[in-house]
Image 1 (cartoon, rainbow, N blue to C red):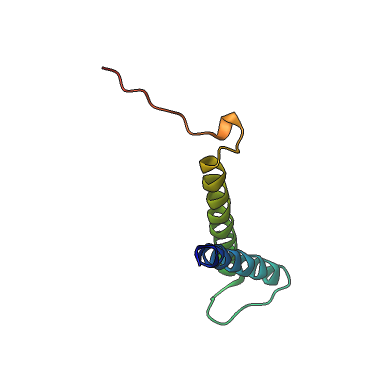
Image 2: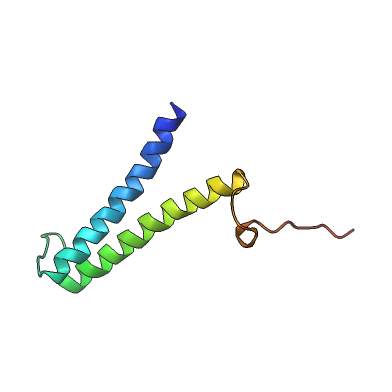
Amino acid sequence: MQRMIALLILLIPGFIAALGIKWMRDTVFGILHPPIPSLIVQFLLGLFCFLVGLGFIAGFILHRDRKRNKVQPRFQKKKRFDSE
């Protein structure tokens, strides 16, 4: 059950990123979708959706790999030392 939930959590940002790529591609070919007022706004919305979706997936994978200690030293969290 946990794996299904994790898959759903990753599929939603994946679909958002795919929608962003589609909107940017449609802008290049001059196809305007009805709720969006202009091609420039459509391209910017597509770029935003793509970056948000990709960033979420990348952050999820980085978080998972940090927990399993499978990242390079430069990507590991820095430990804080409390001064007494």
